[in-house]
Image (cartoon, rainbow, N blue to C red; front, side, top):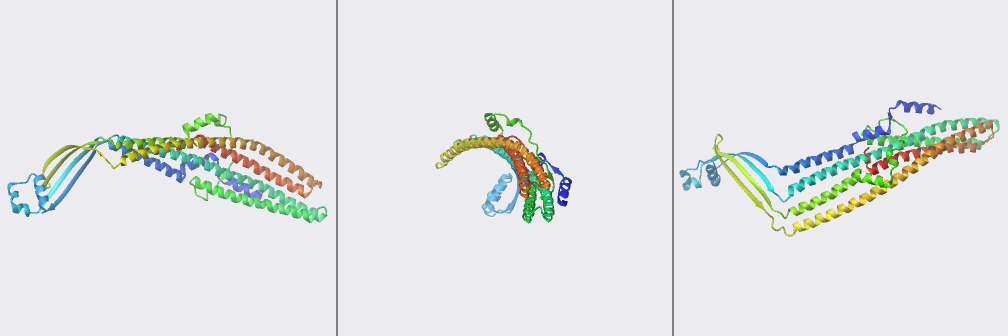
Length: 434
């Protein structure tokens, strides 16, 4: 009886945590999801990196060298406009005096035509960014489903624990009453022993349920990014009708095609494979670039001569030993594989929608039956106990009635949890954002 009084007080002293709150905490603090979002931001940076290929590359170099190496001295004097007739002497050419050389240079390189390489690279980077973002959305949907499932386990364990508390108190009273009747000669030791065994079984079920609740709570804390030992009280979710429960399968399939992250990711992967084919074909086209440079050079830091240079370059790989053809064939096969993967993912998504919808319908039907069964089991137990108190019902009748109450409550809460989990599975299957 002391345990029965302590348990609700301890529960209500804890902060309540609803299913919606748990899902929102997980979306905000789950470490794996935060990592997936970081990967999406990383992909966004790669888009900027690829887009830089459209712009000129500007660099500046400032250097200083000193030596008496003949070629170095000759070119340094010539670049500094300090070369004179005396420098043509054989001795001056072979054994020049050490010379210092300062050089500052700006250079600009601009790709004019590259056969579509840069454009395809940018498109590829954008598709990879989309894939990473959709991967984060898919991880969020999976996380919401995992939180719903774990929260349902916690609700089930908590409900069984509460029901077992009441059953323990009732069984203890039954044992006490049976002992008095045994002493009065109206019951046997076998009846008392049967009730005592039932009391031990109910206590065992309560211990098991309490352990399951502790494990589910720890797992829920991990999913929400909270301290593992955080304590909270769960609440039975209210499964309200949703707009998505009524539409036909065709409407749900269409919604999944438009919204489901993994299907959109498969479509992006197919586009990425097609972009790979463009990159492979670009190897057959020439590349044209332009360069310009300006430099100031001299043997003294403050005394330098300026010079400039401009030019253009054409690069065309006429033969790579068949590598370009092989690369194009590989890209084509990759595109074919990506298309088949997308079609298979779509079929799997449709199976998942059908499964979740039918499970939800079944769980809701069982939930209604389970609630009625609990009410009937409690009423039957009340009648049996009244008859037991009047001496017209035996111990076995009380045992069956008490077990029926626990079983009915277990079935009711199991149906509720299945309905909540199936609803989360359906939302995920059609791509609804948590």
